[in-house]
Image (cartoon, rainbow, N blue to C red; front, top):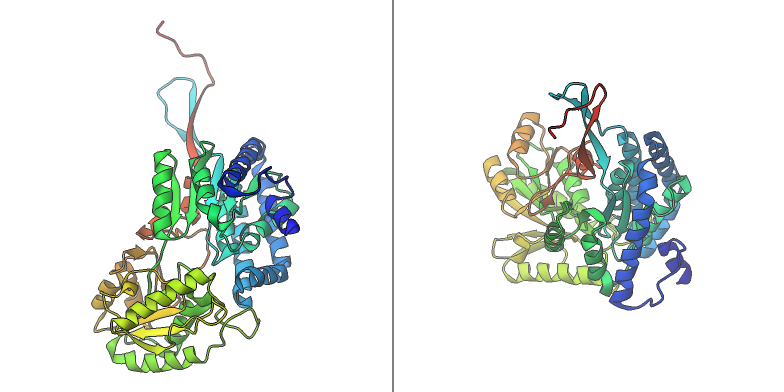
Length: 472
């Protein structure tokens, strides 16, 4: 336990009183202080140096893929393939951030003042608070810190409670080994009971200039309100109630595979997971039969890589919440085509559940499940499909499986989702793409627009010829 705590604190001395909210608050404030002190030096490093550190860290992370698999297995019982995906994608995010170092461009502004030069430049904000959930610890951790660091900011990262190592410490270790100066990236990993106090301490600290939050809609609302109260911007990616649309012309074998992966990878635990399959009535029975066969044949649980497929839920609280949503739906008339919604003896595993006959008076109709459950709905045309996909107040992602590109692009333009993928259900972690959230799924944009979120515009003028005349 002492070695684990040492890795989390970066070898720094722990607070005098290691217990209780006061100590947790002190730890958060101390991390902000350290980052604040480190910011000035880091922000003035040459861009090429920042770029090289991020690139080297990406290479080191790939070399530690085996360690990532072992760590995520210990913390989350994550499936090995999911852990490998986290390592690869997090490394790519660091590589993309390395290339983005040169992107914040300035411009010369017109000025009526003779002999003066007027410039608009972008400068880093300072300390960024990054708060991430546990379900994709390396991917979400890397995304939360990579661009802020590339732009010259310091970051204090609070990873998910279940994933302090894979969601925070591993990233700090590879960045430190790559040359990131001490204190530029802090990791705060409080006990569950102190989590809210630490988040509040980070959001309200006046030295924190912006907040980057990924998590539930309810928690995100509280973070946004607190940040706004202190006049600081927040970038929020919150809940998703995502749909996969299958028109009548779709290749059903491909549609079944897309639905299988997007619904049950990582036990369906993720804001980008498919929770609704909306399918044309003419092919619904055929699709459902093929889909049920593949779902029931899935090897379950983890970590027994490479045999496992689905992984497990993050913790017993999540499992019980998912079970309660399924029980509510079944009690109100839904039909379970596969699974029962029973939590296994380990407290975090559940056989995948495919539901039909889900109606608006069931809790699962609008609530994000983030578990191994998907509802299948039938419609008569694309117009009905688009309308049904918009009924939950979440506009995060959507997928369309079709053999007709014109149909796919037409539907994509009408869907209330920030990211729509035709013939692909995954959410690629492409830093250049304007991925973000609309409606109850959050606020702001990650990726390219995040540069604007983690820098500020500064107007600079210089008298290069002559001097202005003052009126007095």
